[in-house]
Amino acid sequence: MGESFGKSFTVVEATSENNETQIWIAVAKPSQALTLVLAAVPQGWTVEVLDVALTSKQQKMFEELNLEPGDVHRLDKA
Image 1 (cartoon, rainbow, N blue to C red):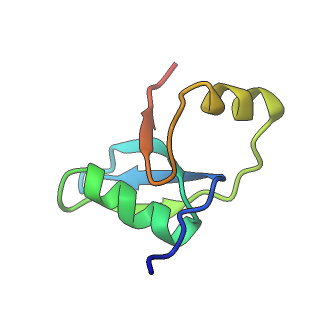
Image 2 (cartoon, one colour):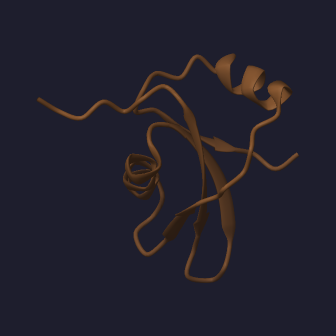
């Protein structure tokens, strides 16, 4: 049986070879989130989990995206 993704949000930073960065959220445990984001970004990018505490406003915003366990979403720069 496969491992559960969990229901919490993990924030991941992805960095390209030329130092472009993107911030992603994943509905997955941190180790799984890294793999999911790596699959979503171009080859050659690196990823790391950001140790950030989500505010209640951010948590609500992410919940409104209606992401399912195992989903990832890139956050656009504001």
